[in-house]
Image 1 (tube, helix red, strand yellow):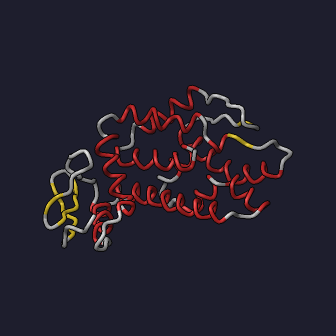
Image 2 (spheres, rainbow, N blue to C red):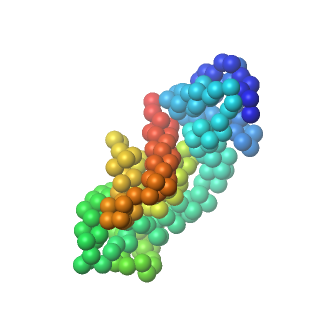
Image 3 (cartoon, rainbow, N blue to C red):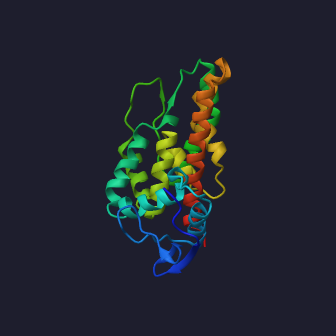
Length: 232
């Protein structure tokens, strides 16, 4: 698609902030007013539009796409989205370890335990750890505590958490990304501990490196989206 606008701005409006193209407010993919909660997020979204060349690259709108999802999907049925997000807790990667006598187990313990313990302490619950790949349900009390916490989040935070948890295959990592000062690269290394371990043993394939970098960029954008949405 050819670029069809000249001027891009972030403007305050009723209920929040919006991006305008040549003075006209943008709508979501489903036709709703695209109003976001913070100036910082609106400015970041405006930068996506301003950074386009003569041809618009539809893959370059990570913030816009997350905003649309928050407005069009999450805000319309947050309860359904919360149930969907909870599935990442039921099979959280950080809960499934190698056997204790395997070298990988030590790496997993070092990287994964601090994340789980911090979340357990904050939410007053406990995750079930498993050695091996056989599924073991998480305690009902744990899922209930996580559900209660998710219900405190706004649609923009929930949209970010769902993306983060999906990419990391871990709700624990997704929620950790919302913490103040969260480091996207450090969290991505935690989520990818097994893949990185295998690469250290056998070497990286260029396609695997490329995929890891692409997914890290998506993870970082979702983390930044959550941070920007709550900025003053």
